[in-house]
Length: 426
Image 1 (tube, helix red, strand yellow):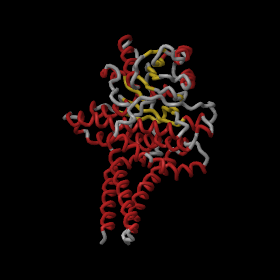
Image 2: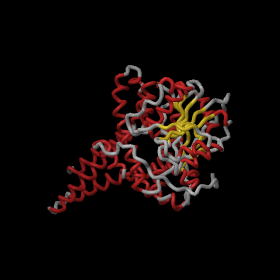
Image 3: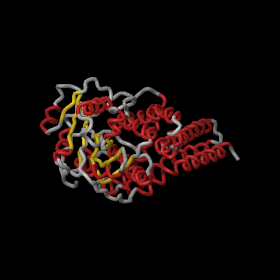
Image 4: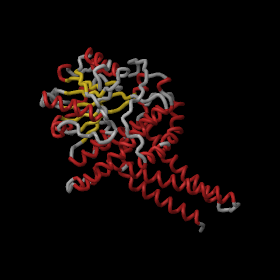
C-alpha cells in the first residue's frame, strides 16, 4: 500500500469520526419541516421593544411602521430606540412614531446601547415590563409579532427566539436578491428550522441571534442590564451564559420578523467576518468560566449544543489541509515525473469534493426545510443549490482569520439596502 493510500484511509477515518461526533446536531435536521404547536397566552403582558439604532435613519422607518401595525394592544408595549448622538435624524422619526429615544454616546458595541437602555428602564420603572425584546433597526415585524411573542411566554423559558425570515424575499426586488444575499440567507434556515426547532422540543439550548430575541424581566433584573459587551457578538455571549446560569431557552416559529441581507458580496463578507470572530471570541471567553463551575460543567448536552461548530471547524480544517497538502505533493511529484503524482492529486480532489458534498447536502436540506420562505423561482433555487456550497467554502479563510488574527473585531457600520417595500406576498 502506498503512502497516499494510507493518508486517504487516515483522512476517511477522521472524517467518519467527526461526522459521528456531529450526529446529535445532524439529528435536528429531521425536525426541519415539523410544525410547532401554537401557544395561547393566558394574559396580556407588558413588553419593551429595544431597538439599537446608531445611524439607522435610512432603515428604521420600515420597522417603525411595522410596530404601529401590531395586532397587540398598543398600551401593552413600548418601543425604545437607542441612538449614539443628539443630531441623529433617527430621533425625530422615532418620536413621531411614539417611541422613546435613548441617547447613548460613545457606543463601542451593540451591547453598550442595550446595557444603558436597560439600566435606565430598571432605574426608572423596574417592574413595568414582563419581558424585553431586542430588534435590529433594519428588521420588519410581522403584524402579529408582539402577540405571538406574548404567546411564547407560556413556554416558561427565560430566553425566547423568534422565527427569522429574509426581508429581501418579501419586500425587495431582483436587485436586492443577488446570489450572495440568497446564499447568506440560508443561515437563518440552518439556525431555526434545522436547529432551534428540534432544540426547543427537546429542551436544549437554542442558538440565540441578537434580533427577535426576548428576555424575561427577571433575567434583565438579575443581570442588572446587559452584561454581554466583551465581543462583537453579544448574542453569542448570551448563549454561553445560558449554559452557565442554567436558563431555559425556547424557539417559537409563529413569532416572525424579517431580516435584511446585504446586497453585495463585499458587505456580506464583512458581516460574516465579524460574526465568526464573535462566535470564536465568545467561546474562548466563556469556556473557562463554564469549566470552573461545578454545576455548569456537568451540563454536557447544553455545552455540546453551544460548541458543536468546532466539530465542523475541525472537519473542514482537516479536509482543507488534506487537500492542500496532497495538491502540493502532486505538483512536486509531477514536476519530477513520479507516478505517485496521480494518487496525490486524487486525494486532493477527494478532500475538496468532501467539503463541497457536505455543504451540498446541507443546502439541499435547507431548501426543502424552508422552501416556501425562500421566495425565488425554481431555476434560481437550483442555481443556489450548486453555488451555496462554494459560498460556504469561503468560511475557510474567514474562520482562519478569526482564529489566528486580531482582524474583524470592530463594530463598523453596515451599508443598508434601499427597499421599495410592498406588503405583497407577505
